[in-house]
Image 1 (cartoon, rainbow, N blue to C red):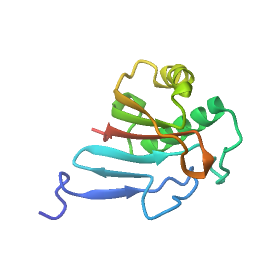
Image 2 (spheres, helix red, strand yellow; image 1 turned 135 degrees about the vertical axis):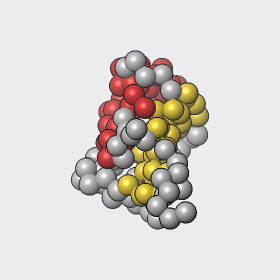
Image 3 (cartoon, one colour; image 1 turned 180 degrees about the vertical axis):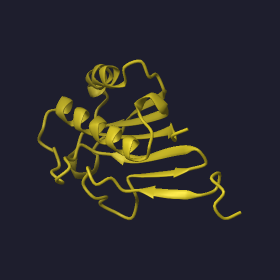
Image 4 (tube, rainbow, N blue to C red; image 1 turned 90 degrees about the vertical axis):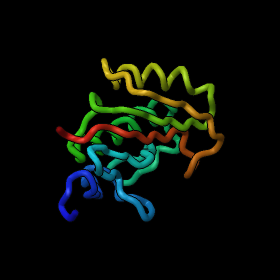
Length: 134
């Protein structure tokens, strides 16, 4: 049925983020859920933080995730699941501390996956699923 909110899909491109580097949207909203594409430590002007410390990369990545959620009408408090990819599992403790501060009282399901080298030599990527606005 056309116009049925349970089947409508809406692509979200976030003006406050660098444009997607491929054939995808920052996020997609459908069936009451927000699916946020993998966010990298890239500033809104498109600068890749390849040489920045891990902590700086993690904070930028989480800021990008928050911006995508907000543009989709959601937020950190509506997160259901977060997937984190790190280039080295030795970065997990630092990420966990930064993430706990960023997430506050939200405690979505989460996975942290060590991957080895990530795109552009970056150290972290985060994707998420959240509830859309009520």
